[in-house]
Length: 266
Length: 263
Image 1 (tube, each protein chain N blue to C red):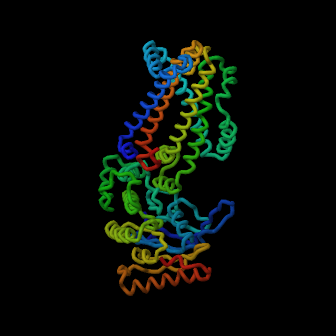
Image 2: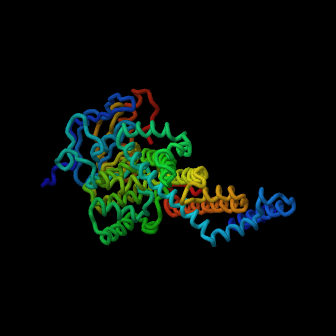
Image 3: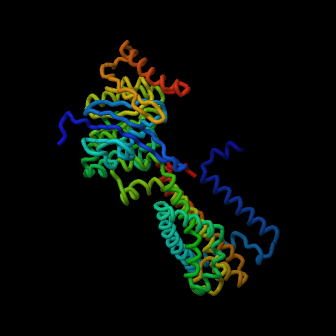
């Protein structure tokens, strides 16, 4: 039994390597240490290609750290499973041959061994929660980008995971849809209390959604700082502006050293 | 004229064109007084079709051809799937598929028929063998491509649900590869259909259970030109029929799912 003070995810000196096409070993993440507390929204931010997605994949169980200790609910991160439901950026995370509702029902049946009646009921509930009940019987290719992401979030939430891992979930959406979904995700988080680990390269998204934001530098990814952004919810507030400036400084500082354009300040 | 034509329903447009072709054909035969031994008129062909379907000769030939084709295709497709599965799951399997398909794919499988006749004799097994050989490669290559081009995110999403092993294959990988698999089956049908007719033509009169190729060759033997045409018409119509069945199945699966564009 895990006590309430045990972090949901605990990383101590985690390094992750990957082997590229040429067989060379490259370090994607170096010596990352952080905790994710139960019920919080923990954001990882950094320049594109800095390894934050790699870290998320390791928590999801798709990759194994080369060094260090990565614990999920007090245990070394296991094989991928529905306890760590992932929402990806790419739209083809939905199964194209199933309707939106069927995607959720299928997930519940295979991952939670639910009988079809109960799975259907749960699916309808989740589709209503993310406001796509009207598209329940449509196929993914018939949906807009925003609706596809809603469907993916519904599928992930239906599994009642101990945490929701989101890999730039709104990265491929237009600005208006992105804002709308950010607001709704915040609402969903408040209502369900689900723990969220979110990867993004948008400073505004990080501050708005995050309770804590972990700023990462690139090549290889190191943790620069973990910033508390809990009380910054109003985008218009001066506190929000201050935090934006601080995160930008943390991100840009490193970028300038590498003599690269400011890609992170989106 | 052009805009009027476009406004007609597509089925009507095609039917009108078929009628036009038939009229030109009939007109040529009637006006030119070409020898009936050389070109049969559509009306004669229709008579032969009716007569030989009534006598059961064409029905039997059609059935024989389809049976041989289906047997060959079933064997070829199963071998193709097995080969593709090995290719997907192991490096040596992939290399094996590359080497074998490089060797056999450029080889018209009908060229194997003489060898098959030595191995199996003048029996339907020879034709089944060459048809299987014609269908195995398109199925194997396309299935392999289908599995290899499944998006990484789709696979990760499936593994995230805890799917492993055969449940991952049946539940996600197979449907995700379906567009390529159906392309492979379509190509293998096209190869198989041409091969089975060609093989039957070569078999000629020797085949006891003769198919459509045998029927045509037999008609040539007796100089029944209209029967030759009748055989060709059946082959063409069956081809159109099977193509449209494939089209129908695709429209209700991969096209409906947005995984493949309508042909």
